[in-house]
Length: 183
Image 1 (tube, rainbow, N blue to C red):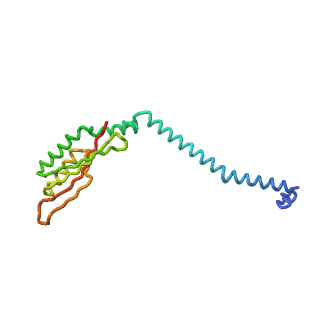
Image 2: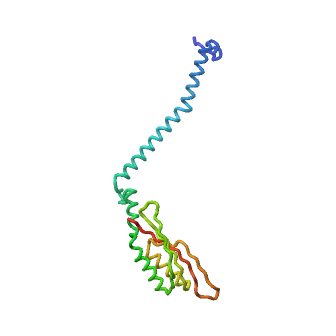
Image 3: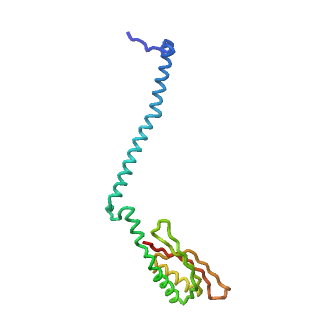
């Protein structure tokens, strides 16, 4: 003969107050485990795997050059900084700027110079503001050649002024930035 399953309502009524509280506590613990602890354990395992991957990549980067020969980030930064001319090369570069202007028959007037040390301390920049006057095509050719021949020279600002529409001469205010290494 088969025994029927006990009815839950009757079984609960047979339990004492402490028994009901224990059952409620067991159900709460089971729910807590299913809905919070298991997803948290899965997340922790995922984070540990990601941490291990990042640590392995960092260790590989610190060991030395990569297979493509690029090097560590510190080596790349040092190579980048070494690409800039030394600070004592500035007079030669300024002379080249004036030579290029002379080749284009431009009149460069007295320039203003400002030295600014970058926060890293390894690079510095000279801000050079120079008024120039000449025809527009001459100014354009001068700027193209100066920027092509001096790779650490940048044109920061440029203003043109012409006295009238029928005038050929243009007055310009050129503001260059020349980057150098200090070490």
